Image (cartoon, rainbow, N blue to C red; front, side, top):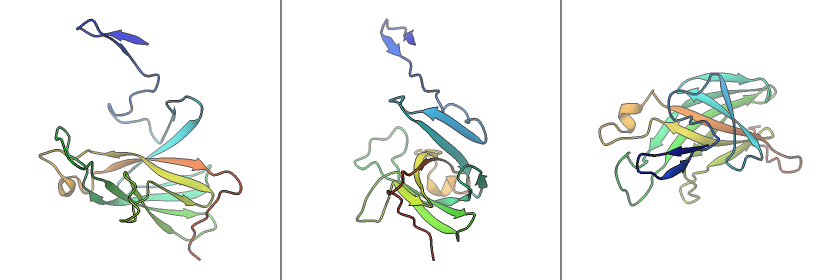
Length: 164
């Protein structure tokens, strides 16, 4: 779809629905990747919320954001910063396992953008709200919402990370 902007410039509107404007549909939202080849299941959780994922046969709890050093909106930063989400996953036949997911990979600090558990890969798709110059991590504590992308791992590539 092409839209004409007042300046006479044509802009292509993406085929992906704009999930940032307003809240996504509950309880799960499915959308295609930009390449359009593969669908992703994005699960949205509020801080402290637990959901049972029937397809994956596991509970997932968003415990909270333990760090949010992302650059505030409207500010030019030297470093983009990162948000670190703590989630707890528990399969039907496994013990609870805590996973820390970051918006930025940094092996020196132990930040991972994705982690595997029980045959699935978990990665952060969204962390909201974004810090502003008026509201930072402390102001948003308890009001964060994340979008998690959960992908089934192919046979032979599973690095099960359950506690034993």
